[in-house]
Structures are given as C-alpha cells and as structure tokens.
Image 1 (tube, rainbow, N blue to C red):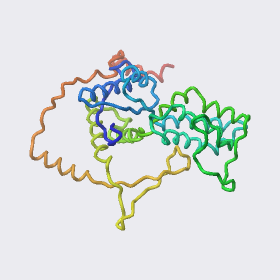
Image 2 (image 1 turned 120 degrees about the horizontal axis):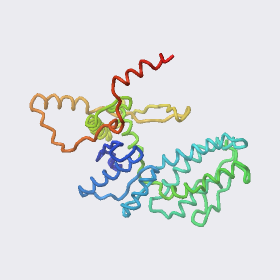
Image 3 (image 1 turned 120 degrees about the vertical axis):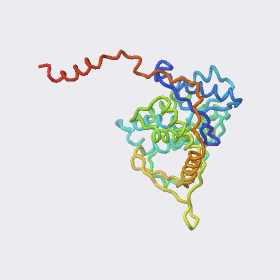
Image 4 (image 1 turned 90 degrees about the vertical axis):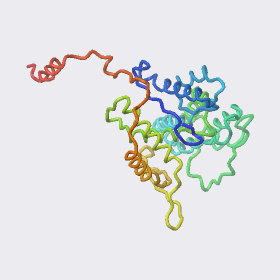
Length: 323
C-alpha cells in the first residue's frame, strides 16, 4: 500500500505449501511485492511494517538503502499488555491510572520528531516517562533536559505520583528500558502508520470471509475486488448535513473496555455508477478469455495421504459401536 496516497498498489496471494509453511508466507509476500515494484521502476525509500523479525532481517540484508520503520500501534499494543499485567500484581494497583498516559507518551515520542532524528534524543524522550510519573520534569538526559509540557496544576491532578524505589517503579523501569524497547524506539515511524493496511484487511474479510473455503483463483479474484473497493473509497469526502455540518459517529470497540472512538461518516458514491457501467459493458461486449499464464499451486490436502472413502466411512459408523 502507498501510505501517502492511501491506495493498494500490489497484491500477492501466497499459499502455505508454496513456501514450506504458514510462518514464511508474510516474508514471501513482501519479497514478491518489492520485486514487482522494482521491476516496474518504482523506487522504495521507506517501508513501514510491524515487528516481524523475518521481515526485519530480510530488509537489513537485501534493502540497505531503504529505511525500515515500525508502526507505533504494534509496539503500543505489546507495551500496554505488559502494563496491564503489572497493574494486577500486588502493590502495583496505582499503575492502572497511568496506563493511558504511558501509552500516549509512546505515541508522542516519534510524532514529536522526524524519522531521521538523533536516536539518543529519541531514547531520552522515551525514558523520561519514568521521571514524569514521579513528578520529576527536569534532567532527563544530555539531549532532552526538560519536559515540553507547561506547568502542572496540582489542583487538577487526579493520578497519584509513583514513588521511587517501590516495586511498581522498579518493574516499570525494567519494561521501559527493556532490550526490545531499545530496538523498537529508534525505528518507530513518525510519518506513516499501518492503520490503513489493517483497515484493508477488514475489507478483505468482507469479500473473502475466513469461515468459507475458496479456490486459489477465486481467492485471487476476491482480493482484487477488495482492493478495487478500498481504493475507490479511500479518498471519500466526509458526509455533511443539509446545514453543512460534518457528520461523525461514536463507536465503543470491545478492546477499549468502555472507552469510545469518534469516526468520520463518509459519503457513498461509486456503487450505482459501477453497477450501471457493468450492465452497459455486459450488453455491448463479449468477455475476453483470461490470458493469465500462472498456474495455481496444488491444494493443501495433497501433502497428506488420503484414505479410501469406504474405510473412512466405516470408521465413522463404528466409532460409537465398538462395545
């Protein structure tokens, strides 16, 4: 996906028996997609992904001139899980009221500076959170001396400050300064995120539900339709009332546990036009033969030894009558 234009530019359908297992499918899809873009003369300056280790290694070895950035949401998701688990331990209950602020700070670190910012400055911005929860707002490091927020109003404070040397502070500092965070923080993307890719995945689930089985070319066709639908609707305008007021909706996602999300209501524009165009084309022309030279890989069940149907049916009928 071109994150700047918010459109899908290439699709790769990988079947697990093509690459030796499902754990290798995502990396193979990236390899084929990069190869397709390079063959068509499209240079890649930056790729934003999740924390997939195989993808990260392949990019280091094969795309040294391409910047590899990590989506913040994936890092924040794991960070929040660790905080929730810690807040359930004894003497750590006060951490729960700080979780939202800690996660917001993680989003602020890359958004406050470009991707090429000094990694030491970015790291000091990140680790300053252990001082801020203790009401310490100066002396975070050599490059980041003081918090950028203004003076805090004690009367407006509702969260209790954490005290140094306590169990909750020691474990929080271990999470913030962990080896994984030292790898991820410098790579967090400040410009683009993969939320649009996640939205496209939900569109795929509408065109190709996982509860149904499709043939290889049936799945390929449904993926193409999902991409066409997504690209057509990715640039829709926000709907407005007759008075000209922009429309919004409020939803309560299950994972937010009572918290809400405000979404923009978008306009509907292409379905009627596409339907009329399809009817016109169908009445005026014949469908050409597909010239795709690719051959579908063998079905997944080919790797197993298939029993004789009569034997399998016999075992099914006698399963509950052996006594």
